Image (cartoon, rainbow, N blue to C red; front, side, top):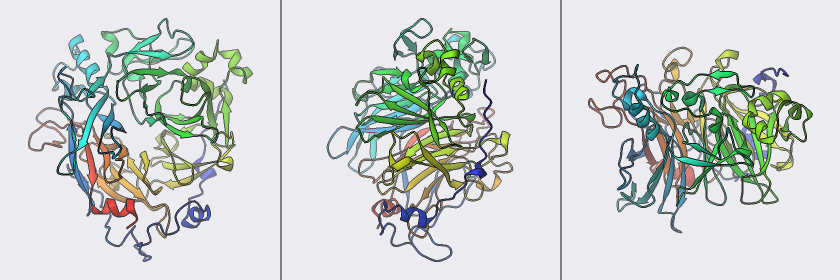
Length: 535
């Protein structure tokens, strides 16, 4: 098999400057006009960035507040379904023209057995314990609305409130059966996702190997399941690692095989010039690739062409078996290629990257931003945000230019999820792992945080910290409300490194001696309004 060397980030480090952005002629010239031009300038004079913190609190910079409106274990409906654990990706669907009521999709990425089972019988899992874990992952559809106090809240027992989890039967959108079946049992490991122009949510199955293991196209075992669900259920690994498309109002779902199978982190959609949909995805594993999918038809992702990135040459390489002789030699059909997309990417010469995670497209410039979280194996401890500029601004083009937008190590470390606001400014959260947090070389960054990058003016490209997460937690799933008055954020896995019920490392959000719980919050306040509204 062709060996592909790790891309050396220094080969294309071209930090984007204010002049570069302005020169594109695509951003408002008066954006953030109240910026100070002093040495210690901030996005606006009244904003004081938050300092890193190790406190077991959700801390916010001055002018920001938060409200928690749904928490792990909250009852969703009369059927007894509950809001799951470790909420991640968020996507909002409006139910009225004002955008004051809607359905929030929430990924539930992975179980924390020690918290779910209160540290009991962890070395001897029973089927009943595994079933509890299967019910706690997947995703939730939650009906929310603005209350009289102007804050978002869940509509209890709404008919829209429902769960998809590790037991849900989900069909494949595929030309044939996969491992003898037209459907999979369950979805889980959902990380960053996407939202289509026709109103469906895309939930991405990321670290699927932790549940039923993984194997290569020849049947060789690559990974044994960490959560040991295979002790109770025999499920094929090939049924997981796909993008799941969900209709928010009905909960109807399907697994989209055309987008390939790997540790999907994001499925960010953008409309091409001819109206078809282009989807960008990262494979969240050290030394893996970025992908682009171009739909065959408008309004559907069931068919199309998948490409993998050659970042060194600035080229998207087709994974169509009929266009690549080496793929035809190694795989039996196109679905086989897609099922083992990593192997296919290696064969055609894709560029290995440092943990590609979330991918977002600037609404102002059309440029594609990719978080490369880190790769300790090659000495990249802090990661970077890579910018991809499609040739002629055309997302259908197979050519692009890659450069570094921001490099971690000084002001932030381990970038993860991204979101653009109404004026094209970039918001980012970090993902320093719990096992590495507060240890060298991450000591100065303290807990994970939320950052804001102005994209024009004297501070363009400079990160400002807005929030600090509780102990062991990361902030994920950035999603703005329709009026951009609120930023929905998942607070994921606080206290995940706890060793016993009487030694929780975090007690967020309830405090005292309470068990830590993941939750969804809204961030709001005058300084959010100033950034969004360019006041």
